[in-house]
Amino acid sequence: MKNPTEIYLFSSPVFWVVVGIIIFSAGTFFPFIYARNYMNESEFLDLYDMIHDPLYIIKNVFFSLAMLTKDKESKLKYTKKPYRTPTSFNPR
Amino acid sequence: MKAMVLLQISNQSVSSVLFFGTMGMLALAVGLVIFIVFHQRRVIRYQMQLQEMEEEQQKILLNASIRWQEEERQRIAADLHDDAGPLLATARLYLNENLVNQDISTQLQSIYNAKQIIDDTIQLIRNISHSLMPPTLKNFGLESAVNDLFQKISGSGVVNASCRFHDYRQRLRPEQELLIFRVIQELVNNILKHSSSSFIHVTQNYNEDRFFIRLHHDGRGITQADFDRLNKSALGLGLKNIQSRVKVLQARIEFEKDLSQTYYKVTMEIPVEDHEMIT
Image 1 (tube, rainbow over the protein chains, first blue to last red):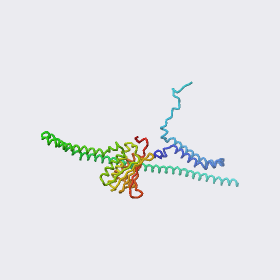
Image 2: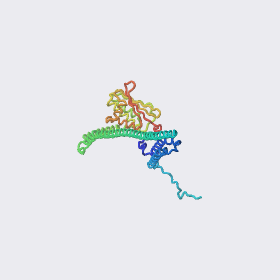
Image 3: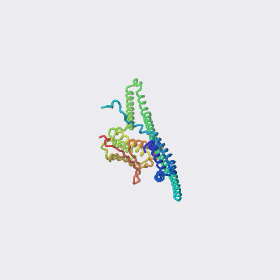
Image 4: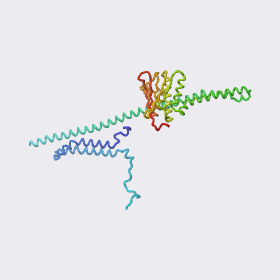
């Protein structure tokens, strides 16, 4: 809460992930509840697909937005190279 | 047949529940997200406002300190130009080249006069330098400096000024002492200028890493509300100076009226680390 730029929501990837999860779970709440008993009926299946598929796409769009959002902190953190360098390579 | 109808009815109700329920849930979810975003925006705006206000206050204080510096410079320049300049010019007149052609008694008289004037000038410059930086403060500490100041004030006979340092065995850091002394000086100055009080009394205490200075007087004083108001307005250069010095000291200053409603009290609380004190 100290620095206003730090709490600006759209710049944090976690926000987009959370929004995607919330919308997907809220939208598919009823279809998933009825799925157990009505899965055999074609009418229900149509409706299920009609609700589930767009929401699935929306969720993935939000996830991709989260991945595209640049995280300031992660840019600063450099990890060590995961592969072997010639000097560290020792066959024996 | 009956079962088919029942199934159809239940199917219809299921699909309507599915449709409206999903819509409702989605609306709730979107509403929640929108609410959070707007709330966050409001918080950000509020913080921005707070920051702006703080910056404004900082600017006022900075302006005040710059103006004060300029005024001080003007005062010193005026002192030097109006007092020291003419005195030295007069001394130079006495010691002109024509002196060698005059008889010995006139020569002696001129030299004596010039010496007198130069002595006066030395005294004057000493006064100016002392008013800029009291030597007692540097050499003997806050207590002596405040005592010195108050003796001078009491000497005028108008105001009875006294001070009492209860717990001042160790000196503070020199820059802290100077800041505290300047604040006391400014407060006393204000009291002499505005309050028409008959006494000023300063007490000092030291308690749990805190250095307390309390100042009482019985004239017309100001309370904390007045102090805050004057601090925000363009008036009250001296008070802004006090404020900025107190800020540098990381201290707290409080203006209040005594419980008996007859005295005004100023309390200054300066945090002091033990290792900061010069043993």
